[in-house]
Length: 299
Image (cartoon, rainbow, N blue to C red; front, side, top):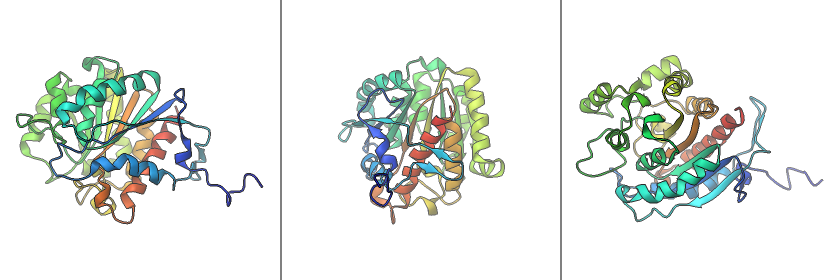
């Protein structure tokens, strides 16, 4: 039997292709410098691709079959030796064509400093761009000591992104400062805590945030900072804390978000494979890729 599944295994990794006409693009952004907590987030793109080999392309719960979808794999950007302040231009130049030519671009970080270049790479002015973050943190640290993975949202506000075009969900207690919270309030950022996301459902909160952003913006970038997930289920995320959202809620929200037609790019950040245990975080990240594709396929 040529189609015997004991002789071959068609995995999510087999969806990756060198065909640039594929509707979805994927690229690695192994930016590791500039992290508040030093680590090896630069290892994440390679690790996630490898973990995708262990993921099927069929979801039996919803009978979703990804086998006919193809994803253009554009490799990794050469960011290993760059500080966040040095990465903006090369990332923007590499990402802009992908975002222009593909319906959805997946960016595998790297630390959270990649979010700012991703937003700038969208073919629109900041006055027409929306940003949704699933993150335990505001990422509104001051920039006077330089750009880091702790201040991409602050840097975007400084660049001219309207605060009303930002929605941040999954924020945790005792992981943020009063100053950052006040900044978010003053800027008009939509904020939903982890507790609110658990009470109302992360996907429901995400849907509400997307509706607000879509009414104001032409295109939306979504930052999936993996430390939004409960730490016990995410050992490979140095910023994860007890009390984060469940893995299943993270997956459900991902699929809903990526079904939205105005979502043109997404990133996965703050996964440090050197901290992982039994590939728990790697497999979660690989499942995230599948959920992104499942959402996109619903468009």
